[in-house]
Structure formats: C-alpha cells, structure tokens
Length: 134
Image 1 (cartoon, rainbow, N blue to C red):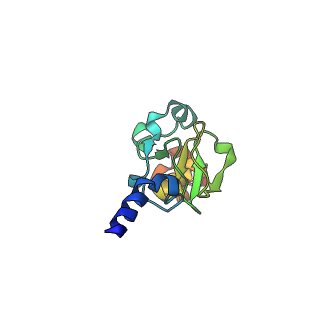
Image 2 (spheres, helix red, strand yellow):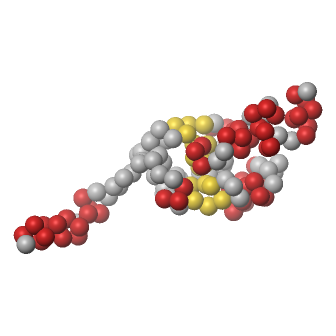
C-alpha cells in the first residue's frame, strides 16, 4: 500500500523529475512532429527545381523538437551550413528547417545537399545534369 502511494507521487512529479525524458533518443518521424517542406514558403523559393510532390516527401522538424544524438541533419533554410551531426541537447529553432537524413531516401538526400552527379541522384537527376555527365 505504501509503495503505491510512493509510485503515485513519482508519477505526479514525473515532468519535474525528468523534464527532458528520452531527449535525443533515436525515434522514427512518426514519434516527433514534422511538417512537409512543401508547407514552408521559403523552401519553395530555395528549392525551385524540386516539384511539389517531391517537397511533400521531405519531413522538416517542427520548432522545439529535440535532435537525435548522432543523426545527420541538413538545414533547408541555411544550405550554406552543410550537413551536421545532431546532439541530444539541441532543439530545432524557429529560423531552421531541419531534415533528418534517415527520414528521406539517399537520392533525395543527395539532391537536397547539392550533389550534382546524376549517378548519385538517380530519379532526381534532371536532363541537363544527365547530358553534362555523358
């Protein structure tokens, strides 16, 4: 009986005891909040060459989401920063449009980060890039 009382007190103060419980734990996109790159106007301007159906395939972390420890990210709002490795004490800020590499296929990832060789872009290579490589 006393143990039940202690356990109920632990649950009552769970958020106070562990405010960032599971922070940085590797999770699938279904377990953290995202929106599609299609829904972000500034991304449309920066990635004009990507059709709408492709932009809809790119999940962008919502502001405040904790980054996964060791995961690779790319900021669509600041592509000049390049790829970086997430730390579990980092959160997506309002001025970032972060994409987790594990949430998109490798050919789309290569297109996002600026790879231009058609063999590495597969179905995302445009005809001009295929001609230049030939």
